[in-house]
Image 1 (cartoon, rainbow, N blue to C red):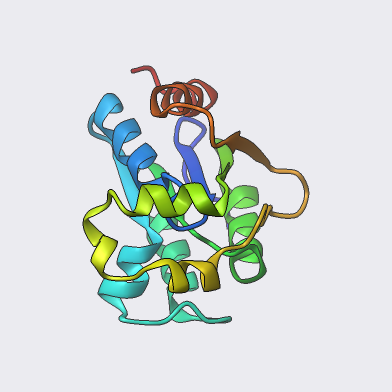
Image 2 (cartoon, one colour):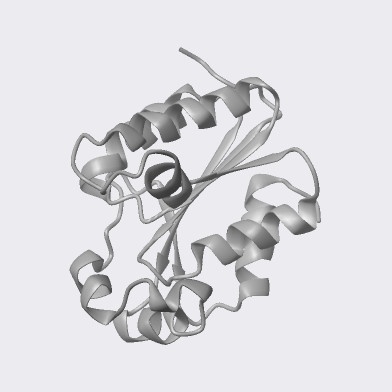
Length: 172
């Protein structure tokens, strides 16, 4: 079922824990202003459902439903999360195919050591540490079909935000 309009934008930010997804999403939203719905996988999975990230988890469908609803209501949507390719690729592919407007997908390619360094600076640094992050880390966990633009670790926040906004046609 088609969703959104030709003027709505779908942006998907994927990458390992500590790669900068939430920071980029928040900055795009801050620069653009209203009309962007932020669909954060961690919020839906951990806070709303209190669910572990497992194959076939309920959060996969919830991410899809929330994004579709927001697009249908005329919002641009940013989905951000680890969004492991094995678990989320099918849902993300259906959403991309069903969205009438432009869709932009990104994978933040950040080495494990750098994710640890960035994690140490985050408010949730005491909630989990290197051992948990090592268990979650997936090197270059790209979606099939070459639909993602790979953002290297050496890009600045400003470089990345400008690129995402330019690709999506969102003036800042």
